[in-house]
Amino acid sequence: MKFLDEAKVFIQSGDGGAGAVSFRREKYIEMGGPDGGDGGRGGSVYAECVDGLNTLIDFRYQQHLKAKKGMHGMGKNRTGASSDDIIVKVPAGTQIFEEDGETMIADFTKVGQRMLLLKGGDGGLGNSHYKTSTNQSPRKSTPGWPGEEKWVWLRLKLLSEAGLAGLPNAGKSTFLSKVSHAKPKIADYPFTTLKPQLGVAYIDGREFVLADIPGLIEGASEGHGLGDKFLKHIERCGVLLHLVDATSDDVVRDYKIIRNELKQYNPALAKKPEILALSKCDALTDDVTADKKKALKKSAKKTIHAISSHSGLGMQDVLREMMKYVEELRSSTMNADSMSD
Image (cartoon, rainbow, N blue to C red):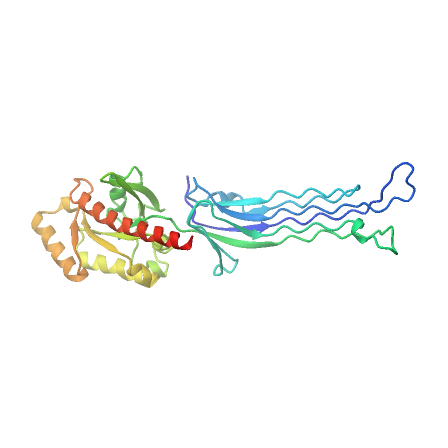
């Protein structure tokens, strides 16, 4: 399935049905009064967060969503049928914006959330409503109220509990493939990953959702490379595993490039819990690995893990530390939900 994280969609609610002009016509009743029924309500447009979706690809092929008009009223005071509402089904993590792309309408983070986007037009009144003591046979009715229409932006931010950050070819996809059942494309050249990948990582009988974000480069926050399209997916992660390629000539420079891009894109990203690891350490001698860990620790001022996705070196320790942060995030989320209830 192709991944699409942004779509522009036209939505339109249905017009209300027209009220009817009708008079009672029965045998032996010469002067039957007005009996025109009201029109039915037009269909409304709702957005709903559903399970089983992880992309907005459907909206590439269906960009216009229009509800139907309500049925007109009929004689014998029969009200026209209301039209069915239409549901814009989106995956968890979707945000809906007005056409300006800045005014947020909805932020769907949980399956089952639902919001009215456009209300269907009310039905018009039949002539039975206009009968008075001086006008026993009104021929007046009203048309249905018009529906509403507008363009909206749908933007998907992956809902992962942890994320992988690093320069292209830092070993993120290989890491994800080893700790989960995800099967990302892996090769020894930059930008192998062209779309975010989600996997479920397992450790000590527990699990958490892990996202592999396509590699960032210097200037990504300003639109260079691929990173500016995917930095937003890191915003919802509770903890970041920052992988630095141990075979790089300058691991400190590589580390600072990513940290700067995160800060430039959104200062809050730079404040997220970060686990720092040197990847591909199986390709180096122990002495070289130790020297690079020392240099990186001096710059980052935090513990440096030495790992290898191929040999399994240090993988369990990193996963356990990530799990610790994920459980803290889950606990704080549950407390916030209980307070809101």
